[in-house]
View 1 (cartoon, rainbow, N blue to C red):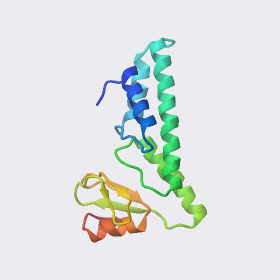
View 2: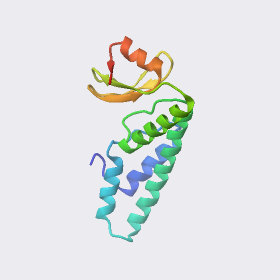
View 3: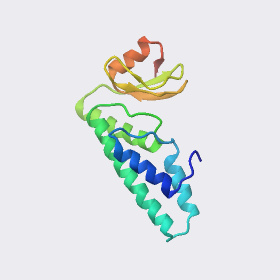
View 4: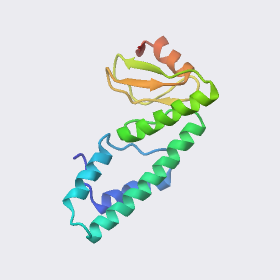
Length: 154
């Protein structure tokens, strides 16, 4: 586990989430780590109850932020837990069907890039070499291709 899951650790995550309107980066396996930790705790223990309460507050706050990112047509920062990326993608697909927007494009990155700001002011990244992501913003896709950072794949 990247960080030991403790009440203190979850409290710090919640504080960071409440401090900013941006989604705080978390490990991709964050939700799986929580599930594993819950299995190790005694069923009705105060620690388990507190951990579940904190986790629910974190999850609620992060879902609100994901919806805000969708409302403003912003790409989510990475790394994020895979469950949150899936939620973002599923909602985005539903919104695109209803709005008639262009379909997402699969982009494969040729090299690792840090978080960068495109010419349109959108933040993209960080991405690892050979990572495949779905992007919706046509100007961001054009930026990636024009700067030889990646390619569109089927």
